[in-house]
Length: 627
Image (cartoon, rainbow, N blue to C red; front, side, top):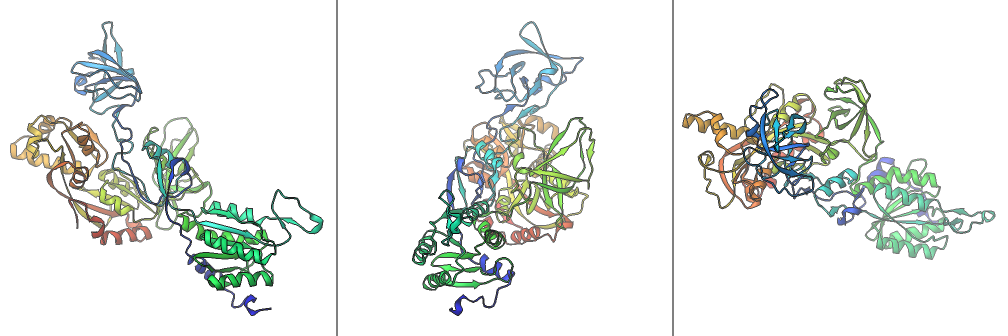
């Protein structure tokens, strides 16, 4: 017997993990139809190319109105307006809402031209002369879901490394994506040997000691579960010439070759000969039970692992040493159970008497313990499916879930894991590039003000804030950048400064009050007003569209690009990207603030290091500068 077949210098399990992890089995990325994307892993970031919804729509049944026509209306002193027509969901409006006119509208219907709010039907009464009494006043945007309110064009929809489950498919479908760039699945060839083996479905002679081939199918299932593409080769038996031929064939066609059994001296000789001719033997024997006769090496450009012959041993060794490498090559995370326990990060009040399935997100605190926080962007928001990891079953009669209370979270998928980094706050195009450097982050663009508030409550790892902000909560500044902001304008407009916007007849699109851009804009209005000797209220009244706000940094510019507005609040980077004009109103700092209790969390530390080396990410982004 050759000494090559002796189990010499058995490797430790730790060494075996290192050797297998060092094998190169990474496949090339590929593009697949959306219908075939389930359970695949994104190879690159997917940004929204369209607004969802793609139009301003009514969020309830009622009447589309000009908000200013309802000012002062109440139960005691209603306003009577004329009904010009009806707008139903799924049809293009054929009515224009002018002063003193309303349109009856259904939930989900397109807002007709001229209307900027909806009065719910419960606060109205029809009159006998094609009119309607309005018994409440509304503000611009009330009961309206603006275009892009769910997810806005230009926003970061999904990041590289995201495993695609039905919830991500729902989001991609809403964005109109029909092909998805994904990580390739490593091709894993599977060979079983032994004269006693018979493939399932073939006749079995138990009297002759025959048994069904368990390992081929078991390993194929385990490979697929780990994210690989199993390729089963014909049964070689103990025909060693055929075994050698199949090893060569599998190595030419696959990223990884697995064999099971082959423990006889002759079989091992065949494997050694093939490895010596075309590759390298890196490990023979592991100090673990079961699994001592494990082989690891290469055959040409393919990796090779020889597993024990007993099915339980083969599967155990595969799951312990090989599955992690297959998952890593496919971009997969280790599996988790479908239910996890955690503690509430914040108190969540709930006053209704019905059972509640509360969408919930997960984040790990500084000790690695799971924190649970509520996620709710509304039942119509597709992105809630991505922002939430599962749900908490809240029994009827529960008034609130207390901070620190232990709850069970039913995961939307057993593959769900908490994000490595949870951020909240301002949205920003450079931030999207930064997040691409993090494995499995989650970022909720809630605005600077809300990000600071959530950070004060201890929920996120980081908050991103822009412009003038103030907070009584402790936070650790880990870096930031400067961005140029101002008015994004259509190329043919003659808006050249803030005075033109105030004095001219232009349609403007603003940002929401939680946004750092909005706070800087309001500050610029105050300064402008001081020079003119007028207050902000007078300037606001002069700007058509000031109170109609959007929640994403590109949304105002997208309105301008579509011809729905003359100017919008935005960034130079956005104007350059979309080919629009830009009127600079200044620069503002963007700061990344860390939860002081999680400053040493690995993902926070790595994110801070990336910010320190931000120059390469800024390249090509107009108006962005390191700070």
